[in-house]
Length: 305
Image (cartoon, one colour):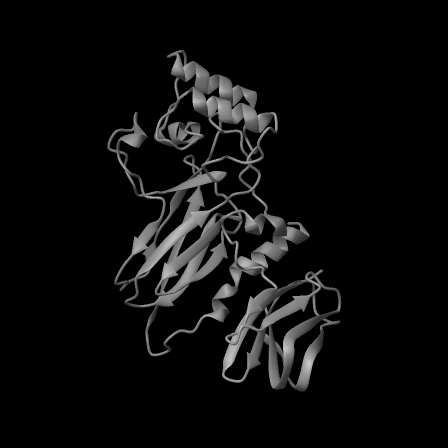
């Protein structure tokens, strides 16, 4: 696992500690496996939960994800991956789709046919091969109407496997009024890859976080309630970074947490606008900074290179 993968895993694997639970509620687990239709696990898929809890994790090398949630809540689970659109996409895939259109070759499974719907208009046509050609020749750099992968809840049974577009298929999992530990698994399919050649041990660089899955997590600027902008820089940083508060405050508390939620510093600063935060002895990775001013608090994520 390379450094960027470790950064990403730290980001999405441990964001739960930013969230506040009602400790009086019993807790349950929502978990699942994300794999191909042949059961091959898919690593580093972003999985978000929303509703009574908002958080994200990523799948491990076994395709496994897990959330600990409050009993009785309503939850929606949504997988996402939107990097490396050319993974598994080649001229051969384009030929296979063309052959299918002229009844000269099959696309065997409903997942295979959904992969062939490159422009996501719920049909397979010559326009799909056109988009693939533009991607292969780098005329375009991403799928215009689709992310790189789609995910379908594994328990779903297609009413018509030969026409998976004849009915809606679930691309998120729902767990309402949760009373028991729940499993929600997904089948992942790579858009444009109809000969199953894509690599499933995926990786995500920090730049990929802005590609439609986790666009708002790595953000070193924010606005506090009185519209003063707070900035932290540089990001990534070496041994220290600076927090610019936008104006001078009588007291500012800064708490720093590791990606696993362990508080490593808790310092108070008085009558200052610029604060230098030193982390010379900490390992490279993601750190979450809580800035407390008056009765308000804001979180910011920083990357130590």
